[in-house]
Length: 275
Image (cartoon, rainbow, N blue to C red; front, top):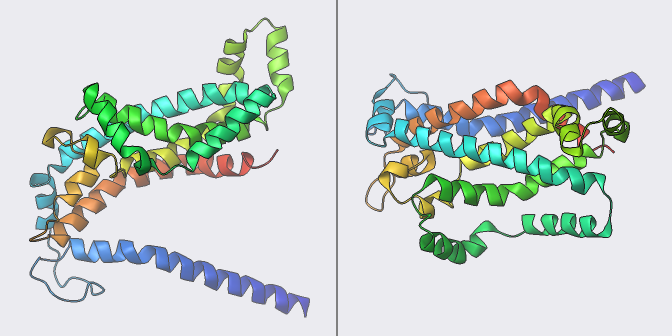
């Protein structure tokens, strides 16, 4: 009887996973079918194309200047990730190791900042960047995205550092290492799992950012992938096929990133939650 109940639970769980996975794959399937159909093809988006139409991908590269947009997105994402991981780890280390009332207050403030909707301070942000000539610049958008992603980075790093035994640092200090050298040579190499988690969580968000890019990157030379894809939609017309093709191309770097970091990503998510 127990054997039957156990198999029934496994069957129900397996069916639930399959259904949930199928729901997540539906947008990818529809995007793929639309990307290979002509603009004049009015058949259901659920149906596979009768013939493969590759001109949508050509339009995505030529009319939306997708290569330029991907270059800009890569520069912004890479620079932001470097700052987010470096500053996040450096800030989280003393907050996690030195337990005091002040540090608790700071951590709580960081959590509170995470709850603030980014667009709620768009007007003062836009005004400030305009005054300091940060509009249509790499450093302006990188500084903005880094600022809004740092709280999550600090939160994840601080939770993970709690799981690292203090004896490792004490042994390094006995050998004559300074606090910074101890962090650089002992602690930071142990942060690979959570660093991968931070890279994926913040990197994907920055790569897909639209809310800040549409206001801070108004120049055609500075447009990113989200702005390039949105250029296929206007009040008078739209090109779903080219937009779907551009979306497929734009998502490839994110998939590659996750494939390389998925092992560390899972370890970081589980280890950071255990003290």
